[in-house]
Length: 442
Image (cartoon, rainbow, N blue to C red; front, side, top):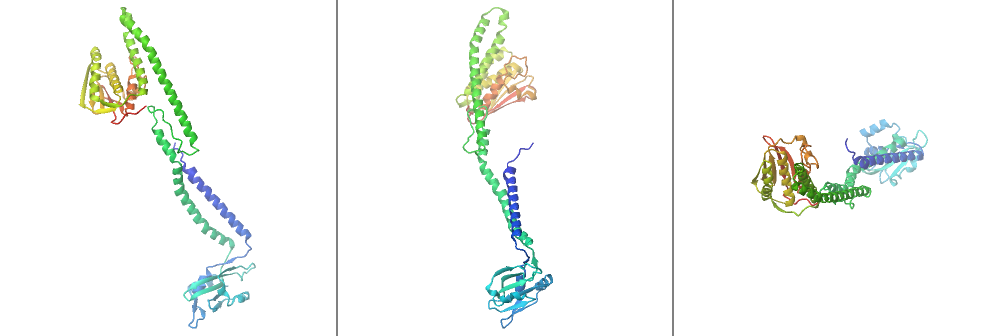
């Protein structure tokens, strides 16, 4: 299911509310204008430029009317057309049946600039419009009666002229400016997301910053920080328990081992293998506890490290009837914890000797370490699970299930990767790729 976006509640919904509010406001204004109107139609203002364009001047300065297509069309549209025209000098002309009431304007039209006269009684012969028009023969004042318009049509046209630009500007501002505002307001969330991406089990003690998030998001950030704090406290308790349990087990196991080794009873000496596995398990638990503390980062010569581990493990391989070899293709030095990387190689080699074939090879190729055996191999669907703690591929085997988990933990702390592959011709290759950078701090 696709995650919901904030664009709809923060952009689309407010735009709809704005448009509805604006529409209702315009409708209220229109209704108020229609209710307050005193009644009667308006004269169409389009007649004055047509009339002014049809006026010419004689050589003696008098005004005369000339026929034009626009004037003919106006007469056809309004058969009762009448008008009065005057120039700045008071010279004028009349056309049509001008109501006698307008005789008082004769010679005074140039003193006026704008007017809308409305006749309240049909047939509205007194309804007229007055405008000043600039023409080639000078400025003319036109008072005329032509096509009539009802108030509702005028109001609707006027409202559309005002309403539509506002809607366009409001839409543009909402879709262009609002996303920018939202991005600025949510910038703190992006920063929090980047901080959260850096949180992992190997980097404890991290908290999300509350300084750059909106007040509405701050409770969520505080809740996450409280959860992280509780997780750190639980991890610390777990580490203390593992350390205490391992140390407490060491002494009785050592006593038991001494008694078994000093005994002569064959049944008692048969317990040596079980005691050895128990000792390894205790050491691995202590290794887990030491992993949480981390060690100092220093240059580690992988070739020298590999040769030293193989030399230490050689007696065990000989006793088990196995062969163990080291192959250095390209030496390399990486920053890291030498003791932790030594435990990685020892665990991989011990695992290969115990569960692999008869021949085990440790190969060093730059920052890549490979342990290869010629055993039965590991099924593809089990290659990731074997790195989980206490996971054993064969339940009847004597391993503790912690060796490869320790390997994965150490490699992760060195910003590296570990993976299991099938070896050509049979067997298993465990490949460790270490980073050239500084290992991660706990």
